[in-house]
Image 1 (cartoon, one colour):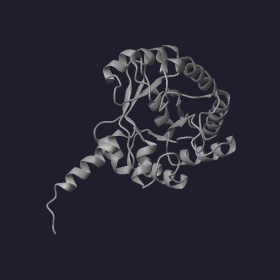
Image 2 (cartoon, helix red, strand yellow):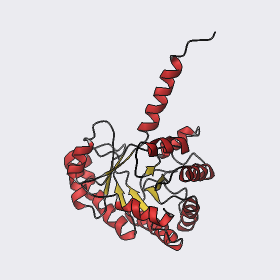
Image 3 (cartoon, helix red, strand yellow):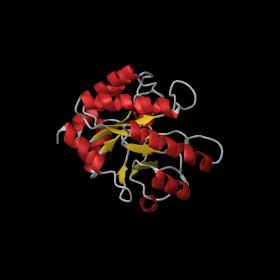
Image 4 (cartoon, one colour):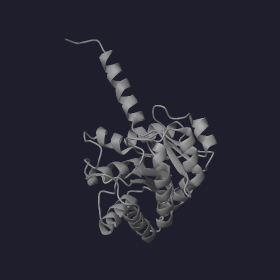
Amino acid sequence: MTQSEQAAAFAGLHRPGQPISLYNVWDAGSARAVAAAGARAIATSSWAVAAAQGFRDGEDLPLDRLLDVAGRITAAVDLPVSVDFEGGYAEGEEDLARNIGQLLERGAIGINFEDRVVQGEGLYSVDRQAQRIGALRRAAEQQGIALFINARTDLFLGQAGDPALSIDPALDRARAYAEAGASGFFIPGLIDEALIARICAGSPLPVNVMMMEGAPSANHLARLGVARISYGATPYAETMKALEQRAQAIPSQA
């Protein structure tokens, strides 16, 4: 498939009630393994990609290293590839446009793009993040790619207090992000079934939930109207733990 065909195919996999499950990868080898298992698309986890290269999450991994990993993944599999792009490695629209252009040149057709101020504190305002999403959309259109922008909100991830109080603010963000050109709405950290259902019912964008401890099963999430299920850094963490255990089982040569 061409890059444009992959982009269209990826968007079509986001169906509320019939969610696409993305078992997140971190390099070309893990992408090939997941593809061999029958995946219909590949998605990275920023935490896992950074850790696999010896860096911390939060744009500590240099952009050129991320672009190299992304290019190696797209070259290794004939599937749509979505890259966890964190905050786009930039603040302003011009820099964001340049960075997404470089990522598209590596063959990616989708991104996660978060509203957390990665190198600072708190979240961008709704209007500011909408402007940033708009810059990404315009840059992708200039390259003729219908980029799937999975707009992530960090209202629920690591936040104290009652998550129910963040539902209306989250839906305000979903509507603003949709108007700005986002393609999906990612709500990591939210695991309450009733609250997920409210997001799915009120969001104009297909909703992405991250599997984590306490989250509903995939079947439950489908019934709630979720369109995409992600596994985040869990595949990497579990793989590294299994590797450690296998290494420990090797008889000592001392």
